[in-house]
Image (cartoon, rainbow, N blue to C red):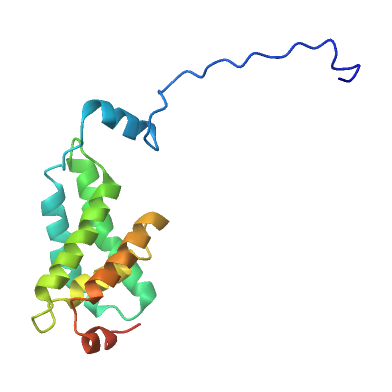
Length: 160
């Protein structure tokens, strides 16, 4: 011990106040564990259907930048509506994940038809450039799953 620090007392560490530390990664997950599982809000399904039905506009884009802009506009319009009209249940990351799942389901359903799978396919490509990294990665993974349902020569004929 140095002569300078010899007369100092050690500080006691006080317990922190606030949210109890649980197994969740965030206070919301800790709170959710106390209140039960969250239920999907009623606005999710109609909202996702509107985005998927409007995805046809993506087929007219001429490059990656325009695809990103039109995708952002499509999602932004729907999220703007939800934020201003829905009183609760604004779990936007959960909504995004459900949108990605439903896009893959639509590709799977439409893969047997001539070109019905292309709009949700392009939407997934647009989603890979939007949002936080975790959500963009979910869209990229979904493209890999969707690729299994589309004929190889069909998706390879799509623009890069």
